[in-house]
Amino acid sequence: MLAIDTNVVVRLIVDDDHEQCLRAERLITNYPVYVSNTVLLECEWVLRSAYGLDPSDFVEAFRDFSGIANVNLEDPRLAAAALSWHESGMDFADAMHLGRADGCEAFVSFDKGLAKTAAKVGRMRVRAP
Image 1 (tube, rainbow, N blue to C red):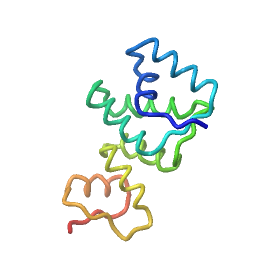
Image 2 (image 1 turned 135 degrees about the horizontal axis):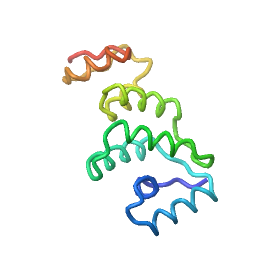
Image 3 (image 1 turned 90 degrees about the vertical axis):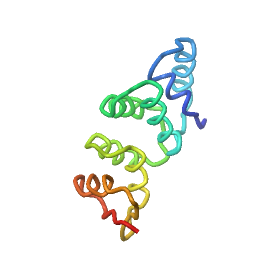
């Protein structure tokens, strides 16, 4: 299995450099690849900040990508939950943080918006320090 970087995933999704997109596609077609949680997190940031993808486009693109047979996510349940919460309006990084904190009594943050969004999607309690 090969671990892949954010830029491989981004090239495949946006095809802004066709030659690199084809190389990424060939790689993923021919080898099992591993996508870490940190790569997933960085993909959302790059696609949002550099390419202007809105949350629904990111969610759709990443669900399509993660459905490729040779793609192995570090934590598929976390990815699925974070994508769902992001689709419901939660910041993607916050969704990843909350998903990793599953089983804790609460998630502590100064972010009042996160607390409201977490309550809306039925996640663990977010409280102030």
